[in-house]
Image (cartoon, rainbow, N blue to C red; front, side, top):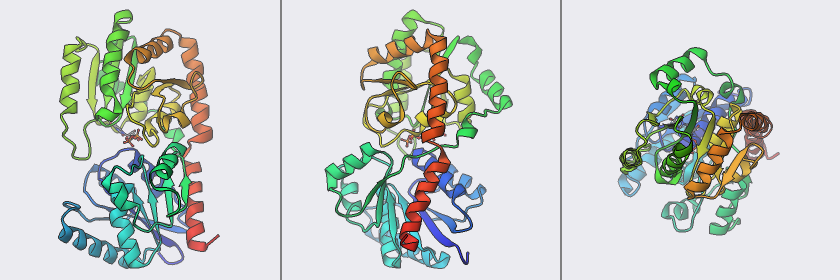
Length: 380
Ligand code: UDP
């Protein structure tokens, strides 16, 4: 690794969500002439294998419970050893949880730490209150909305705060594989619908899939030929019962013929190619909303709720719609208005793709991130 700066990324989960998609793009795109990225996972999972297959050196250091001081101490010692073995010059941790490990190991190893927050910080959350006390040379927020929340909760005095909007591989999302697309269409019997509305993301109350189902019932009164595809599952070990509650709701609303639960999928470009539009009905502010950019890159208009990072992604009435959170009637209206006007849908899809290319391209995100690395490593 001589001549190049080894940078360690500490990721608390082994399954793919938005933060992991962001780090995946960074890990595989960082300028190899200057940086040697390595990844440390605090849990094993399918995403660990993806990173390994991308040729990134990895170390898995499974943790049990943060509250177990022996386990915490043992983990920090092991992380410090690993940082020394790789001669790491800078540690980047994902989420407050990752920073509680990566930030402390970095401090002990006397190397600078970056905390990429990937969330909306709150002084009510013990984890955030703890993470904010751990030294970080820079805190990165994924949107202005997340940065403002951080300042409201903790002020901006502890560490410089930077906003870097996550980015996606636009080319990948606009080039679905025809065979995979045909397989998905056949497997899910999508030809029975005239239009398809998709929602992609973890199944959890904050993502608002239940609101989409309530809107689906209203849409169905006018357009019984519209299908709804729910992609994703309960992740990060969460077994909240939300997934089974959603299935029960589908039955109660009489939507069994029109709603498909597709589970977790890697073929997102193909899912989007099969869809007419994407709905993201978040009920709580999210720091960003990568699926919105992915759908836009695929040339699909998106309907999102008018809170959090989504406001910085969607230009309402131009690349999609922003609707009030928690309002299935407004959501159903927006879905119907887009489904009933193919010309407008097409124009919005094109505007969405242009915006994804201009503002949410992975290359731009990586360049901004490299700039932060240069500042810390070279003092430039
Ligand atoms: N995702 C996926 N397959 C699924 C569901 C989600 O690959 O079945 C990916 C999705 O494409 C996106 C990420 O998981 O890259 C979700 O990111 P987002 O920022 O929307 O949500 P977060 O997980 O950060 O709350």
